[in-house]
Length: 427
Image (cartoon, rainbow, N blue to C red; front, side, top):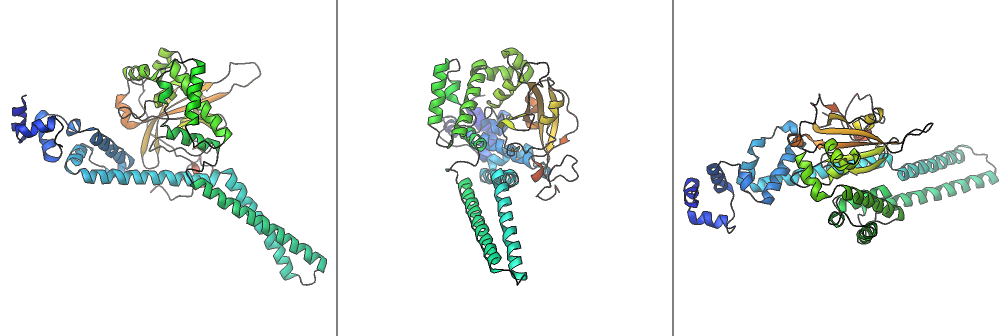
């Protein structure tokens, strides 16, 4: 089709179309819809990267609240005819999502933070002693002066301890809410370190076959350039995470791994055979494709005690503090079937669904009389990505209801609940 014919059919002048093609005029609204209609393509294919990102985020917003039954077929028209309303919708979605994540994290911290639990227990003990001692002094009138003095000393000492504990708790909250002052635990410091780097290290991926000395220098430079690691342990965890990343990059260079994953339709078992690595390594590497062409894959790896060893959260699947996850996760069920890759369709409260692949892997060679150590991994794939997977994924049964953490899970009547929930019911 000539430029003149396209312009005529779209109802615009050829000179205006020429300006659009040379990126000298913006195209939106009826003009964009008219050109797309003539060419027989969705309007989104003609929009720039910003509009494509806007469309993708609107789809995420629709998936976040599936009960509202948003008209997905009209997303292109919404972004082209009413871009302001589209941006407003996505801004509200991001705000809601961030608030939900913050509420979940704060609720989880209040429940499981060992410092908070110890501090509150200490303060309650101090208050109990002060109250009982004061009650004795008030209700017993014939106490000897020497014993009265001893009771006064007890009240003074317990009051001082109570004051110290309250001040320490206040400093802790000030420290925890200051994003520049570090984090409460080394595990949290590691999480934030990985988030700051978007869970990827281009410095390593650029030279995956570097020798050990060169790789150590690269890792040291990254750590030196990050000011958020405020303790020896957090730096050690960050260094180990980068060492593991470098090992995966050396075996599965990202420049080769990405096209291989696309060709094999993201089949973890086929990729493991191709590169001669275990499934957990492939799981980790798949998450390093996130952000490319709309790929979003989450991951949790934990030991048999429930402590998480690797985490890659998703926007709609936030992860709780270490060791406080929902017991219904396929991650934990995989320990009963080590070596078997299990697939399941899981559903969070709010009908957000994910494909979960779980696999428990022995970390030691078998030895007589010694139990093997197992790590279990759970790969999380949003259902919207399912059409890009191959036929390696078996048919999925009815969705399995799960939560994030018992303390913040609104499901009623759950037999696996280990703690009372503090939020409202699911309805």
